Image 1 (tube, one colour):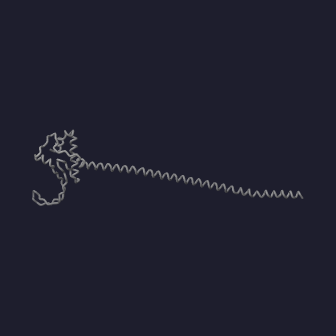
Image 2 (cartoon, one colour; image 1 turned 135 degrees about the vertical axis):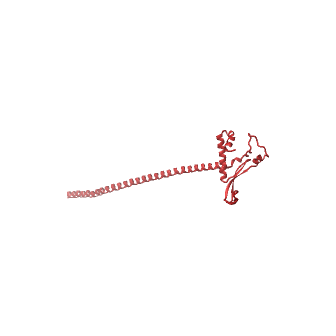
Length: 211
């Protein structure tokens, strides 16, 4: 049985050939990615897939018998589960087509695994992206607020300088008016003695008239 035949075999259970092909591709892709990443994929009743490291060694070429050095490599390995072995050996009877040959996973065991790790990684990426957007959104208004504050400070500074200029102008005009009014008072003070002299003349006239 090849991949196309496997898809045809489960097409009726998956609701169509396309759905079955997508399911097979998704399962195989998840297994390969997990094993390449160094994880162990275990399916209850079926078996486990894992990555095995082989150290450097010497081997013989089967055709020439020459000794050849083999580099250190990593290879995938599949170990069949006990239920799978029992069915193949014949110690257990294979269930009919309508029943599942592999044992169902116990409750709570499907929360972890390669698919869960892939989903968790995708969820972490989305949360990180959302957090970055939130921080960027928070920083942008802060800059605008500071800009507004600086403009407000500039306007207040301009207002204070204008008010200071107005007060200075008023003070200068007040000084000028007081300076102009001061000589007028002096002039009136000088005229006052003139009145006294006229009073003296009248007194002198009266004295002459009495004589």
